[in-house]
Image (cartoon, rainbow, N blue to C red):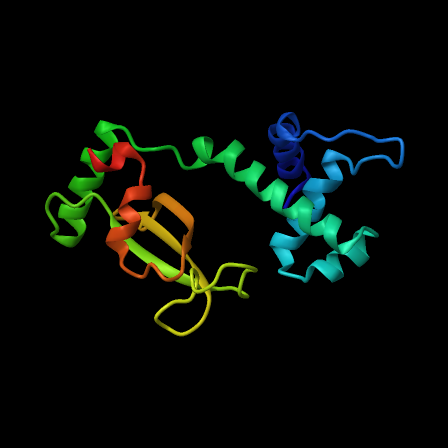
Length: 174
């Protein structure tokens, strides 16, 4: 990531990051929170190795990464993955017909089970038909393979894609 990209990302995210110093200690700065999260996302390293690199506790790193990834999604989704409007839906349908001979198609929908450790007190909620615990990532793409919709966090036991349609934004169903 270039310095300019990082600076731009910080400018977009800082207004959404809220932290306060306490009498016990100073808070982790917004810039460092973003660096910790980028380091984790870019390398896939463990929380322990990230915490050693940044001299922060494992639980602090875990909490920061969870908070900042949610903030990144909330702050950037409308900029980089806006919901298509009526004209864009028509273009998507035309592209599917032109490229793949699929008339009136608005997207290619698929899901993926992401293996997780069993969550405390979850019972068999995330236990899927493949015999492991998971959450489901569902995504829809246009005719060119670009994402138009992404949803994560479905319980792994829900392997039937039709159950996930309830989570889709209203504008996708109309």
